[in-house]
Image (cartoon, rainbow over all chains, first blue to last red; front, side, top):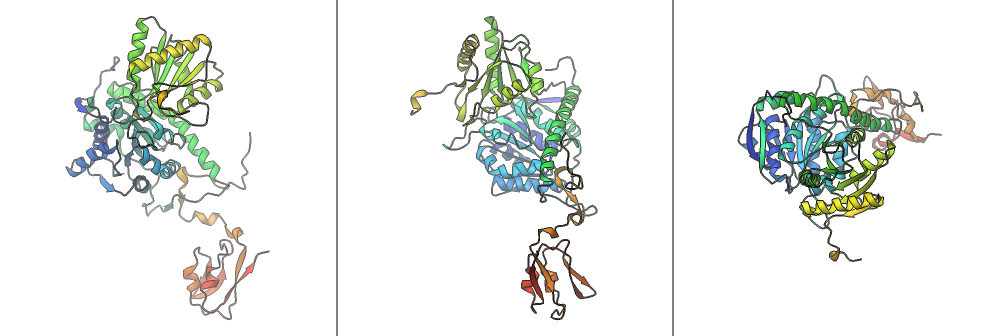
Length: 406
Length: 95
C-alpha cells in the first residue's frame, strides 16, 4: 500500500463493517444535512450516523423522511441552499429515487450518496448484485466502487473533493456490495479527524437560492432552444472530472500513501486472459489469478474503481498483451448484446480499433455465491474460448439450469 | 463543425441552469399566446383583481390605474378576463 511514501497522517486501525466505514467518513466530514430512509442493506450506514447525531458528535441536521424519493429531494433542496448534503440507499430505494437522481446531477449538485448494492425486485431479494447502480449509470453521477470497507472509507473521502470541484459540480455515488461488504467486519485504517476535515475542505456550493443579496432561481424550465446545451454541459463536466480525479488521487497518495486509480490492475502486463471485475469479488479473482499463475497461466485482473467516468483509454493501457477479456457483470441487461460493464468495454475496444475477444460472464445475481471454484471454471471457459476464437458469448456462472423452465 | 444559431441561444447557461434574478425578462414569451386580452377602459373600475390574479406580471398599472397589458410576456391565459367583475376584459384570437 505505502509504496515508498511515508504517510504523514496518523492512523487508527478499527474493526468496521463497510456500512460503518461510510458512517465514519460522514462523522468526520460532518455534512450540514443528511436525509435518508431505511432500506436493507443500507440501513446500518444511516443508523450508525443517526447515533453520532444523537450523541452530539456531529452538528448535522438529520431529516427523517417518508420515502427515498423524499430523501433525495430533501438533499437536493439542501444542496440548492448551499449545504453539503448526503444520503444513502439500496435497490428499490434507489429505484424510487430515480427521478431525483437525474435532477441532482443535472442541477449540478455535488451530493455524496452511498449505495449499498442490492438486487432489484421481483422477486424480492435483499442480497447483493449491481442492478440498482447500473440503472443510474447514464445519469451524470460520478460512480466509485469499493472492494472492501477500507475502500469504502477512502472512496467516501475523495468523493467530496471530486464532486465539489468547481470544474465538476456533479454528485458522487460510492458503491459497496450489500452484506458482503456492508455487514462484514474488517480492519479499516481510519485517519485522524483533522486530516479528513482538512483534506475534504470547506464546502463551496455551486449556487445558493437562500443568498438574498444575490437572488437566483434554480430548477427552471428549458425550451428546445436551451435544453440540449444543458445536457452537453453536464457531459463536459463529467469529461473534466477525469483530470480532477487524477489530481485528487495524486494528492491523496502524497498525503496518506494510499494509491487509488480508475482501474486497478493485478498481473495484467503480460496477461493474455484478463478478468474485469467490480467491488468485493475482486479479492476472489486476485486469489485465483495467483493460483493460476503458479500453474504458469498468463492471467490477470482489472478492478474497476471509477465506473463513471469510464475512461476506457486508461483501461486499454493496462492490458497490452490481452487476447481475451473475461468481463464479469453482476447485473444482467435484458434485450441487448451484453451487460453494462461488457458494453462499456466492448464499445471502448471497438472505438479504439483494438480487436480482443470478449465474453460476458454474468455472476452473483441476487446474492448467488461466487467462489474460487466458480472462478476456475470461468477461467477454463475463457481459455477454451480463446483457443477456439469464441467471442461475444454471454455465460451464466453458477446458474442452476434445473430451475429454469424452457 | 455544426454551428449554434446565435439568435436562438442568446445567452450562455450556468451550471445546473440557475439564473440570476430578473433574467426571465430577456426571454419574451408573448409569442406563446393564441388569445390576447383586450381592455374596455369604460367598464374598468380599477379594482386590481386582474393584477392580483395574473400569474405573470403582465397587467400594467400606474398610479392606481389599470392601463392594459404587457404583450411581451402575457401568454393569453385569460385568467384576468375570467376574474374581472365588470367584464371589462375580452379575449380576442391572435391572427
